[in-house]
Length: 302
Image (cartoon, rainbow, N blue to C red; front, side, top):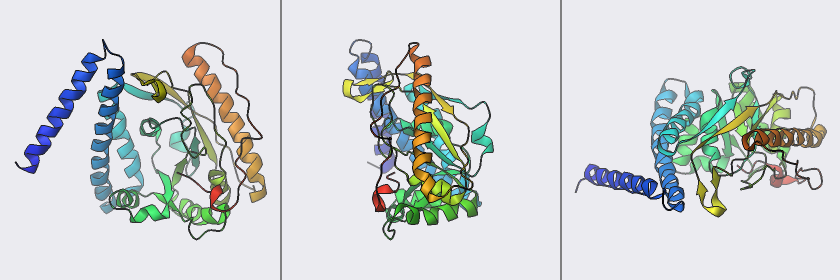
């Protein structure tokens, strides 16, 4: 059997299984969780293959800075077709189109945030990654081809030093970056934020670029892994006004981090209230909601 024949059989069988599970979900709800999970994985694979190919082409054309935006948009449309899930961007002042370069930050709930990025990712923006990932086959190659901003933690004594190279890249290439300051997924059923790490804020201050907070409503009604909930739906994203960092110094980072987190938490609760059509109390925060660490612990974890 040839490779193409095997691939055809695999895709045909995979598609048939997903359709069967979707049909079964009308009787057995958990089958819908399995169906959308499988549909999401194959959608991600298709977008990843497309991303590698388009990154090569755009690199040759000198347009690699839009490679991640192009790949993200492909995932948005494929996921809408295969799972019925999308994110609605609320950006009345068009900050995503006009603010550049900037450090975009957002709350991090589940793996579905990959689709969130697919729906809102601005042009001339990239994710950040550890410099060590650059050598990883396929993933590292794609990141390098698509203009990822790499953070050198291995040879850095503290967060500010680790951000220096990335800050220089942002200024030189006028390249925005997107960072999840929580550092990991919260998997929260109700709107809440984990403590913020300061790497993103050190980066913005060193580069002298604004921070643009992006808030996503809590979407546990669409995806809640603990209860095997995975439904179709439209989830709102709100882009907040840029927070300037010009003139700020490293000693201002703690207050900048704390104030930005408080702002995002309030907006997240308000956005979730609109989705659920009921009032929600702002959750209490332990300490000041900022991770106080030194060395690599204070750098980006994603």
